[in-house]
Structure formats: structure tokens, C-alpha cells
Image 1 (cartoon, each protein chain N blue to C red):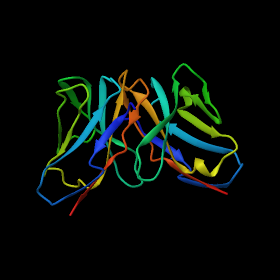
Image 2 (cartoon, each protein chain N blue to C red):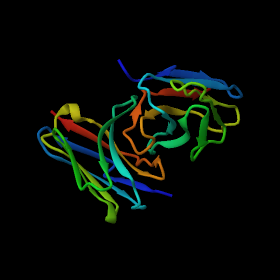
Image 3 (cartoon, chains in turn red, cyan):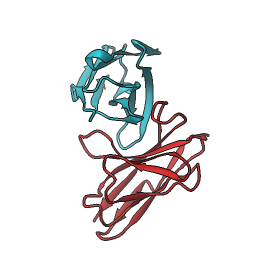
Image 4 (tube, each protein chain N blue to C red):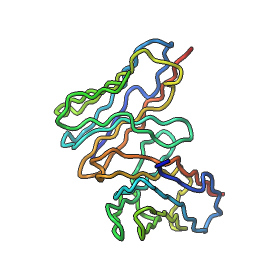
Length: 113
Length: 110
């Protein structure tokens, strides 16, 4: 089945550690996105990529990094510089950039101990 | 910066009642607006995408209207069912980026 796969679903991290969240899609979409969701708030854009080997910062990129070496993959690294990393992270993709319909993965919940 | 507000934040209705969910946004220069559904602890599922040139879009029991000039969209869900219980989010698209409201959490009582 076509879709977006995020892993791991749950992740625990000690302060000072970097962690990488995986996002893979088999929809043949050019554009991919990472969002962060906190309780009671809307989703906030961390990074997005319109094409392979190119990506742009979103509204809250500080403390995060990404790569886009393959069309299917857009991993997100949460670095130790991110001051409040505990959140629900959502990966999305679309065939026409943000002007097209957006499809989401099931999310990854990161907890910093 | 686009600001999106969804009112009410939560809604509880008996089964069979029609639902009306409101979304307002501050920047009317949008390409389109999407409505999503989110179940607890899950990702978002796209329900409807309405283009800026459209006044409404329908899918089954769902109907979304858009008044771009006043910065408003409304999602109507007819004859609600317990399976409609979820959080509904709207997201207008400006400058190739979506902005999300905090959502309306709907509970449909059997």
C-alpha cells in the first residue's frame, strides 16, 4: 500500500543526546515536510523539501536538522540544541508542494527524560 | 504571518445531529484550504481540499465552504455518527506553506 511510514512511533531520549526520526514515502511525491505538534496547539512547520537535495527552514527550525538525499526519505534529527524537544512529530508529503493535498504519516512521539 | 482560529475548541453532540465547525484566518491571500481529521495519537487524514476559486467542496456527508474575502471556512458534517468523534483541523495555504489551527475536538454521543 502507498503511504508514509514514520519510525519509531515512540522514542525516549536523555538530555544532551541527538535523535533521528525516520520518514519514508512510496507515493512518488516530490515535496516532504516535518511538523511539530504540542498539546492544544496547531502544527508548526520545522523544515520542508520541494525536491531532492534541497530543503528550507520552516517557522521553528532551530535545534533541528534534515537531509534529502533520496526522493523517498526525509529524516529529521533533533539535536541537543533544541531546548524543548518533547513533542509529537509528523511527517507529510504532497505531489504538488503545499498547494496540493497533504498526506501524513502516523507520527513519532519523542519524550526527553 | 497567517493566524488560524477554530471555534469552538470542543463540541459534544448526540448522534444524528449536524455538526458545524468554524475556521477563521487573517490573511485572505490563500491558494487553497484543507480540512483534516486527527484521531488521538495518530497522524492527520485529509478530508477536503477547497481551492481559493471555489465556494464549496463536498464529499459524502462532509461539505466545506470558503469565504476567502472574509477569511472564513466552515465544515459541515451531516447526520453525525460516533465514528466522527475526532479532532478536526483547518489549514489555509499561503506562499506554499500551510498554517494550522489548534482544531475542534468533536465527541458524538451514541
